[in-house]
Image (cartoon, rainbow, N blue to C red; front, side, top):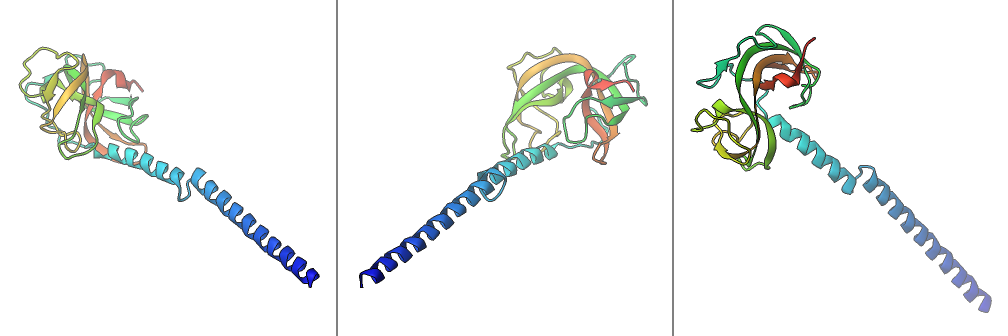
Length: 201
């Protein structure tokens, strides 16, 4: 009788040990999924990064070719209309390294701005670029960083009519360009690329 009890205890102990090992393996599996993009937090982080990437697609890559009233053509620009240049900026995916054809060259003050879109999107910081002629009722002089302005342009969804804060200002030549992105997308009349963001071929 005693031997049967002992055997029963040994068997029960073996079963419990097996369950404990299985539970440990499941925990390791769960940790592996979490750390490498499974159903845990790692995967959610990648989704967040993808959403941030998608936010950039709100930019209107192509434009009508119309320019704001009062915008002056540049005299003797570094990159004349019709010439080719290589884009060195990365305002959007596939832009950096693309060959651009210059459609327009203009002398103006160019700004980086921060604002909250009118469509309820996430706040935008240091957006490049808005030019002086796209701001409402600001007169002729360049504006200082920290100035609040109203934007009269729709480079991105929810931009037109928004109140923005100027982050930086620079007097320079800006260009409207046509290009084929490195991802194969045809872009027409893109606004704007500054002279420092272009290089000769």
